Image (cartoon, rainbow, N blue to C red; front, top):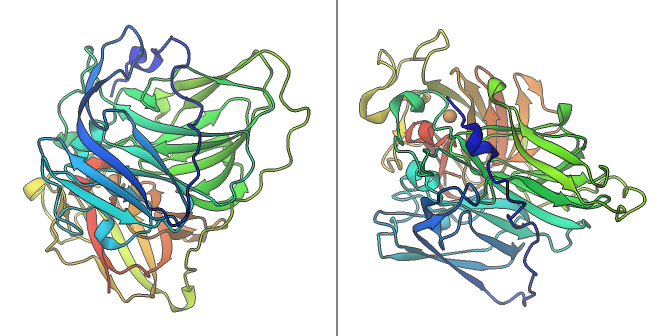
Length: 475
Ligand code: C2O
Ligand code: CU
């Protein structure tokens, strides 16, 4: 895989991407907030002045789509219109909502046909950093730009000087700035998925972010890439993680200052900007060892810090109303992640559909969970991977038998990560997507309190569409 330095380094014109948030308007609690989103083709500039524009598919013509901001517990309606030439849906990633609003075609709703529309309506129970994206032809639709941030505000937010969103996307562009063809390449699907050559923050190849010494910022980071895993380092700074996937955690500094986010994963950071006025500090991503690159720079304005002394340690965010898993009565289900290319194992055929097949099986099958492969947009008729009674605590024991990383996402619920490779996880953080390293085992626990058929799949979109997808039924 070749990453074009030019693509990653362009954007020499100073920070054009928006840092400041729009003013928040206030509204009465009884009012339903209606938003409209139109999925349609558009032309945007991703790589900066002087570089070619890119034809994309986008919500309301912008990349990323409009940032939706609502208050926790407030009813929202989003009317989605489809001006694409193919079916679409919108999935509200991580938001615990009724099954019929979950946006999975064939499973929770009829797809939105070209020219059609669908009104999603729900009341987000949890405050935090979420996002939205299609769940139909996901590899192409997400890969061509359909995605946006969804921020649910606490009724009493913690005090910061600025609340910033970095919506990170990864594109594979050719020299003319066009989105390269080849979505669904079989070889890639059996490996790390479609990793691009151009990383954007809020729709632009970033250059420098202007900051002020002394400020405390809340930085919400969303990895909306199809396949790229990020490992971010903030030179000279000590970010504190206060939430994963929208759910508050005990504030902590990540090990080695390294924040790892697989596709679909989010983190809320508190960063005290205690660098020197006039200095520049690098933010880099070094997940793929020989492909480390500078993501952007924090450029300090000259002049006095806004504060003499750093504020006291960041407070915890207010907790969300999540049901606590009861491990004593939990049902435990083993889930083997299987398939893909090599690593000395070849196909991890443990019987089932995968046994004895080559790298790519029948009908686009490359990956499996417990020997079963749901592919494409899904097959609603397929038997659920796990069936649960409503209110039951469930432990999913994920075992990655493959040579690749898998960010596993459960719809409609957040879960606690309770162990890694047999060792209790001291933080037991809540997530909706957990990154399972090659050959490792992770246990997650959740209360099956939300009835319906819910997707459980890898968020490396190539993996999802070629078999690493299943449903969990709660009745
Ligand atoms: Cu963010 Cu099923 O997806
Ligand atoms: Cu995967």
